[in-house]
Image (spheres, one colour):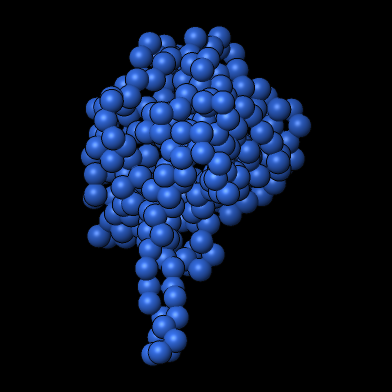
Length: 278
């Protein structure tokens, strides 16, 4: 994961210092990109231990359309606990937007609006399958999934950081690009890279394609300057290990469980704890 380390180094060397809502302060760069080719290995940080099982649990939770931490997430990770209400609810966050984007149509006879839902994931999977089969399709450049629903943001416990992503089919390969408006480089970014790389691998398997390049575009890529820099400097001093590989059970995407997505040959340096700023 030399790309991740180069990202850390670039922000430390060239970033601007800011105050932020947490009053901790940060150093950041606005507008930065890294690429990860899954054909060369699975992009999981090796200069510290990353709990891959937690990442997969969250991703599958998103793919179910879930918004409550008690719906198959809490037993794996507490990452969303600080934002959940007493019943565990987070509002219409990622999974809801991915699978249940609200749509309204006017009934001209009654003057009332009817509410339906759009399953963005199901739609793009269907289009990707048709493209993989060699069909021409008018939506080949429209394979986008958005979590940034302006009307729903006030109802969300936390506005989406990874706002939208786009797939691309070319010569039997599936690529993915993510735009992330806000990227916490020490804590969040290793998870985000692995999560979207795993999503790319899952959708590629579902559609009969080879998982190719994941491009990670970040708007505000920041490091918490007071309490995250020492841990990141420790990672910069460590020699990365070879990348692990990913194995996914031969099942339909809807049937996958945490135990069906396995990381093989993951070598890593000791865990580094970073304080979460709420």
